[in-house]
Length: 136
Image 1 (cartoon, rainbow, N blue to C red):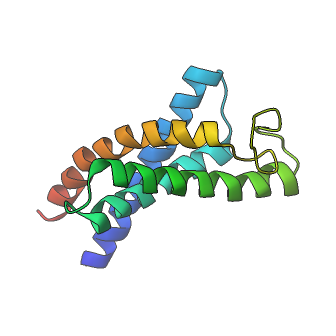
Image 2: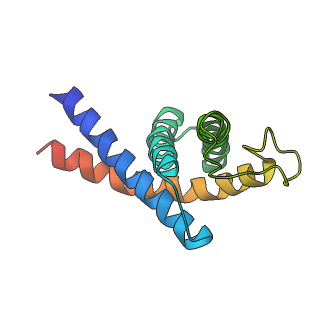
């Protein structure tokens, strides 16, 4: 039963992460895409694991650094599938300095570093609520 609870918590975290990410995109870019929902959900779940695994012995800055790298890697993989393979052109960073295949760039990795602060904080608030409710 505990395994089912863990899966359900991750599903809820995925749904919340995807929603929040798309909301941020709509507010900043006035549009989003289903692939961004998938990326946001996956990143939010993985950031939760980063927070748990690194624990209190590692500071918030280290967790933000690792989270930013993870978000960048997820963005790269999803970009390769969605933008390169499927040619949907959801985003294109080719005009940005030091971009890699137009899918990722250091400027956005810095942005993900900042955004991960909020994701880590939100994760710390939401995950315990689900855990408490499933343990009743």
